[in-house]
Every structure is written in structure tokens, then in C-alpha cells.
Image (cartoon, rainbow, N blue to C red; front, side, top):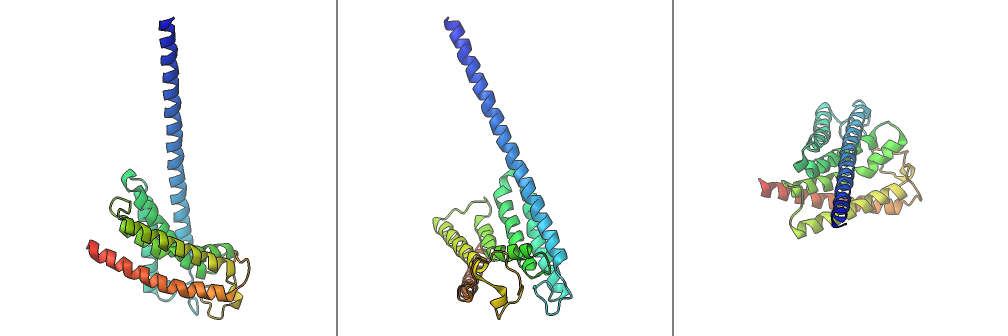
Length: 228
């Protein structure tokens, strides 16, 4: 009886171990497939944004359309971040950094989508993602080389920056009617996420973001100088 009980316990333990291993394997495979899908979508977004920019637009509605040099710089920065991030995703130790770089490239090219003559939904998505560019690049700089932001003060700063960028994106997406924006530039006719037109809120969030972006840019310069 004791021997039978031990065999039963051993059999149950072995079965539980096998089930746990299979579940872990499925989760790992699912995570890898999700990363591959994210990389492919990001690359598709990047190449499509580059093709959507009209270098002959008059007046130009994106920085990339201002000149050939500006277009080359825009492609090098945006596509470079996406490709570098996608490559880093294949390295287990660099996946966090890769994801940040890839998202930064997607956000960078969001401004191109916003000013491109393309589908209204993609224009609106571009406007929604563009403000996160400087935050993601700063996060990437602070997370080097481990992929984690170590200092509590730096983590708090990043969280606040993401919160402000989210509020600005939401304010522009939900309340900005391009037809009522006398100072519109990249897009003057499309906002697929508009809920209620309020030029005051849209203008306030835009002005706020200019100052926040300036502060984040100075912080990014300080971080880069310190690391150098």
C-alpha cells in the first residue's frame, strides 16, 4: 500500500511538472509571437509613413517634406529606431530596450502620418502617438544599459512625463476639431477621435505640451551629457 501510494504521488508530481512545463512553454511561445507581430506592425507603420510623405507638398505639412536633407534625417531617425528596436527584441537581455526603441520610432513617424495625405484614421493615430516621442527617447536613455530605470527620482519623472503626454494626446484627440483650428499645420480636416469640439482645451493642451517638450528635451540633453 505504501509503495502504491508513493507511486501515485510520484506520478501526480510528474504530471504536474509536465503540465507546468507545457504551460510555461506556451506562454513563452505566445510572448515570442507577440514580439514578432509587434515588430512586423512597427516596420509596416514605418515604411508606410515614409512612403506617405509627399516631398513636393506646398506648403509642406511635415518636417520631412521641407527638404531632401530633412527627409533623409527623418527616415534615418524614425526607421533607425524601429529597425534597431526590432533587432534588439531578438536578444533576451535587450528586449526592454528594444521595445522602447521600437515604440519611439513609431511615435517619431506619427508626426509624418499626421501630415501625410492618407487615411483619416492613420492621420489621427499619428497625431495621437507623436507626443510620446520625446518621452520614449528619454525613457530609453535613462534605462540604458540594463533596460530598467534604477533611480526612484528618475522613475517618478518618467511616470509624470508619460501622464502628461497621455493627457495632451487625449485632449487633442477628443477635443480638437481641425476645422476650428486657425493655426492648424499638419492636418486641418481630419480627427477620427473627436468627441466634442473645444478649441480652448485643444489650444491649452498644445501650448502646455510645447513647454513640457522643451523641459523634457533639456532633461534628455542633460542625461546624454552625463552618460558621455
